[in-house]
Image (cartoon, rainbow, N blue to C red; front, side):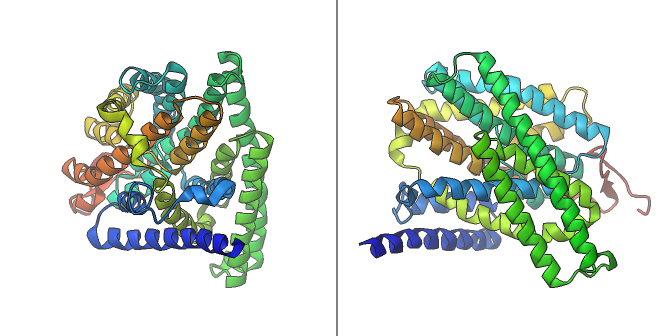
Length: 431
């Protein structure tokens, strides 16, 4: 009996990996965004379709593994994050701050008045919906070949808001369940968790970068030819440090591992500078593998029974979120070096990703254990948000980028994008 159970669990992972890799192949052949195909694959093979992938059978071991894989994706994003230039820094900070305030309030209001959630649960949804997942945004940005300035703004928005929104959503859930007594407790614990995560992530990233610098020098990287043994050891040390950092921070303060993973990646990338490219070449394929298996696996956990009760109210709530983002981005972009075309595209690219799905699944379980009837509605609304923002945005965003002339693939030969200060095209001197 035990061997049969282990065989079924192993088969779930095997099907998930194969389905994800097959989805990547279909995406390559069809030129569709990979995240859209992966989402559709998970829905087709999961509870909403054939039932071949049933993540709930994996039990409590699924959540820690998902967390470790998510930390790898966030670390990879942080490793590539470069916020050089005052205009870029100001754009990211202004967008994140404005979205944090108006996005939370607007998302909660839509969930309450349109989707029918209670205010306490609607606030949790508003916090979860703040995140624009880098697991989805980054592949889209790279596929569309956006101008460097706009691409970095979108990537940085996701990397900053995703861990913050997860921490905020957890605290608002605790407030809804009565574990926290006031909004002051929420604000204090939010600052504590994010602050501790950033501090520990920074220290761990600096220590790791120093070790990697020594290892690269000893292995011949200074001469431009690191030996394979040193490269393999660098990868092992990076993964070991990252996973210990993430799990240790979460034990110390729940959800603090997410900002720690991002910060560690940023510090390692900045410290290694040009040498970070060799580490990125090792980490990036593993992060893509994590996305390949996690997206179908988490999408497979959605059932039509959780989506159907929402009806038109759920769809209206998500569409309202998309309109809200347009208004928020236009407001946040005032005074920034972004023209109306860039603001329009930025407002359209807001897919929710793996962290959003994982947080929703976990919170639904906690609400159900507390006897709150809104558990299924919250999970269903979050996954409906993921489905619509990934499906609609993922399919149409490349077309919109080309129509607005913001994709480098369609830039005229006589124009080149400015690298770090603006997304405008300027004449090429050689042209």
